[in-house]
Image (cartoon, rainbow, N blue to C red):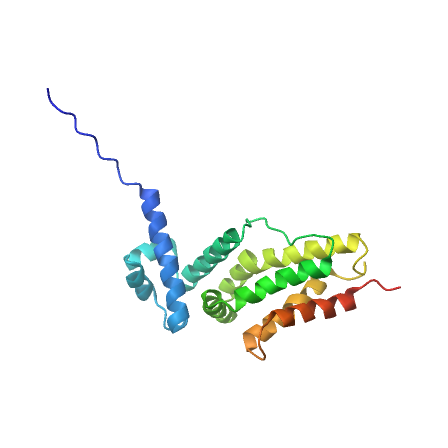
Length: 210
């Protein structure tokens, strides 16, 4: 009686592609953090990831595009690790100051994390000289995050906690603008205490007028 040998499963192309993408993302983020954006190359990313450079060019037109997608993936994984999802909103506990301090403190932690700091600075700098990349970065990452703040401010206005005449988008910029200014220019340390102070001062100015 002859034995029937089990057939070998065909390689899972989608799984292999996902492994390659993950390796490319990790390599791009590591290189830009270690050597800076200018010295990061497609060839270097490919060598670090263990893939051919044509594999990278098949999916992305430039190293800027690779880095942007790598950073968006990093942000998504960080959000997931915190128990959030793509539609996470700013908490609404009924205490606007506490909710905003919670989120701004988390933002400080992210901005001072080396895993985020290097890639973010590289993208911010490249976005200045590459308007298309800058617009995509804003559309894909910054604008959705800003809209979380806008909706939280609007909810506070509906409950009478914020002056109804205030433009919610301007209110948001009072909170996050100084944070980003201190981060990008390294003028002074970026701390939880600073984030708390921004919330207290902003809400004082945004309070309803009697």
